[in-house]
Image 1 (cartoon, rainbow, N blue to C red):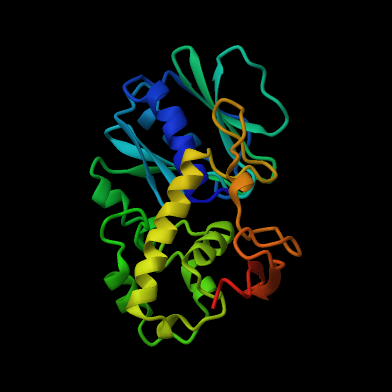
Image 2: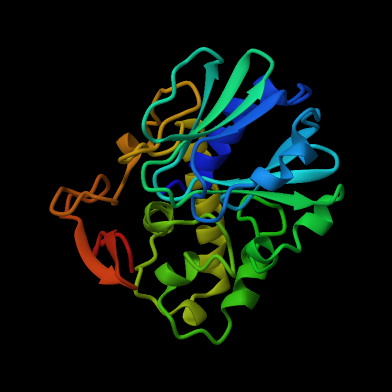
Length: 274
């Protein structure tokens, strides 16, 4: 599933080509993805100029002044910039046409979403039920060791699943939680509430470094994710732990282990992570 780095890479890839341009047509070739597609609201945004394109967690928000198109890539979705004469394939469900450029949503599993949210103020849009309960952005300045210490106080749950709880902090999926904990030297089973402030002062920069490195590498291209130009990310080439069961740790040489946490596989080094 595309996480924060992949969605941010997508945003950076499509924004320069589309912001400031007018949406001339919208073609919906399926009745619904995760939710019904916004056929009835088409008149509200077709013909409008795209003012801005931002990201909240794993959601893209296309601001047309009178409202925002919310896009979520689901588990297998991708957005591509194509010429208007590029034929649609089987899983190409939505085309948003900006003059001679088409923004095409491909989603084989149809777990993605496109919704029209009324309102010209971003704070009003952020009260939508899909967005209102989302946690802090880990790349924001407000996300620091003191904030995290306060958030974790009293929690007995293991730190790895807590990092993946989008109601607390967004976009830190399985890959990035695994890699961040390795960089910080923290065992994934450690009780979240027992981690000292000093260790959190290592963890927060590790999270930010991991996410920023993934963005710079174009994300992790596992299964379906591709960039807006059709290319792939390569952050998977930098993994310290994720997916490396039995392989030697890059730091100490001991084999990487795996365990199950909250129905997800966690990879770690028993020597480097305590």
